[in-house]
Structures are given as C-alpha cells and as structure tokens.
Length: 122
Image (cartoon, rainbow, N blue to C red; front, side):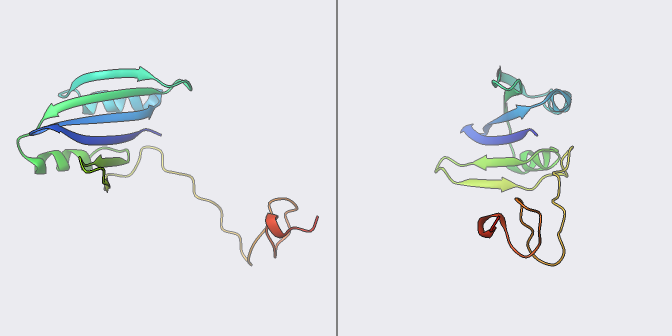
C-alpha cells in the first residue's frame, strides 16, 4: 500500500513523496496530483514506484483540506525532524484484521489454547 510524506521546502512551497506505489494506486495518485509538478520518479527493487510532487500553496488550510482527501496514510515531517500523522480518508485497500481467538492464547507452533509459542513444551 502506498504511503505519503509531506514537507515544506521553501516559503509556501511543499513537496509530497509517495513510496510503494502499486499499479492500481498509480492512476489514483496521478489524477489527484495532476495540478502538481512532478519533480521525481523511480522504482524500488520489488517493482513498486516512487513519485515526488511539488506545489506552492498560499494558504496552509487549503493544503490540509486537500491532504485529507488522499486515500493513503500521510505523514508530515517538520524541519525540526518531528513527524506528525495527518488523518485522511479510508484507504483504498483496508488493512487486514486479525481474527480474534476466544478463550485466551493460542500457540502458533502446536495450535493448542492456553499458551503461546514461547512457552510451548512441544
């Protein structure tokens, strides 16, 4: 699943980098960022793409509103190095939820309930 990082490069100028972009997510990103200037693109070894976009925004509120519409997780990185997650829409592909197991722990080695793999006696 694609994820985005945003940072301020100059006064009122922002850059967004998308990592791990798959073929299905590529079209969504390119249509949403059609008004932005593409300043970089590349590939990871696993075949996923990297995109970097840049744009000037006069008002920070309009940028935040735009970022909330992105269906991928977005992280803002400040010049001080602090990282802040921006709340966005629901992702295109929701993460898988683990099944809940009733009545306590289940061992991943033997499958019995009541202990885990670290305390398994088999």
